[in-house]
Length: 76
Image 1 (cartoon, rainbow, N blue to C red):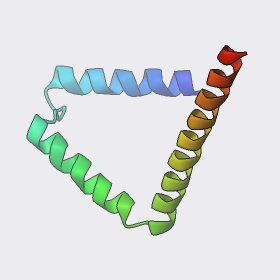
Image 2: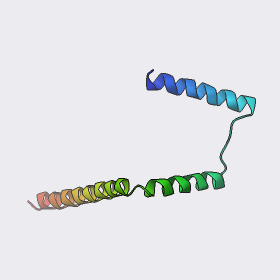
Image 3: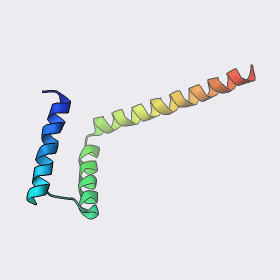
Image 4: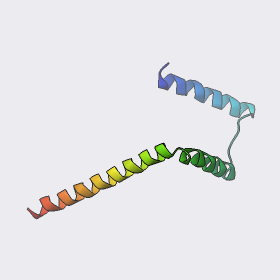
């Protein structure tokens, strides 16, 4: 099943739940707690966190390198 079809079916299910009155809607406090819980779970995976840090460092280094190269080209 392609992604578009899957999304359409899920959307219909969500709409039906709302019409029926059985759909759950997060309030801001509940959403905050869920996000915090997910963040704690992800941060326990040290290897994953190290990979994220490496990617951020590489991205920052690349941006810095491009900025320096851009400055040199402008001076020529």
